[in-house]
Image 1 (cartoon, rainbow, N blue to C red):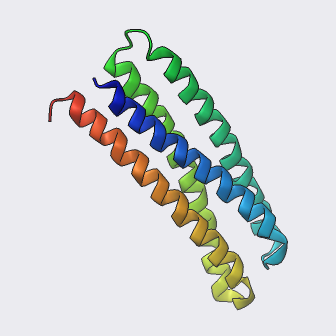
Image 2 (cartoon, rainbow, N blue to C red):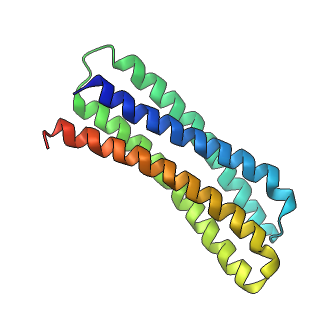
Length: 148
């Protein structure tokens, strides 16, 4: 397994984690400027907290993986590490999807919630795009390791 390919996945995963963090901070800074009910506001705050926590966890895991690359780490261990990280990303993307769906429904009932829906939908798209880049890199690494 090429170490450069592993670092490419690590770079994309790190970038995704940073996009999640930046998105959460941006949402938090704009939350006072958008209309939504208290339940959705609380759900939004929980999603932001999860995104920030996941970013910290992923950066920690990537740093630990980086230390392991100096030794003879097997491809299966590296793939397991990336599977774990991609799963964490997906869990947060699912939470974000549920929130965006709830805001879309709220917007249908109260058009004043439109700005909240747009805020979350756009940031969710940014996160999903970053995730997709990381997923492509991880899949390429897996295919390379399998000789495909």
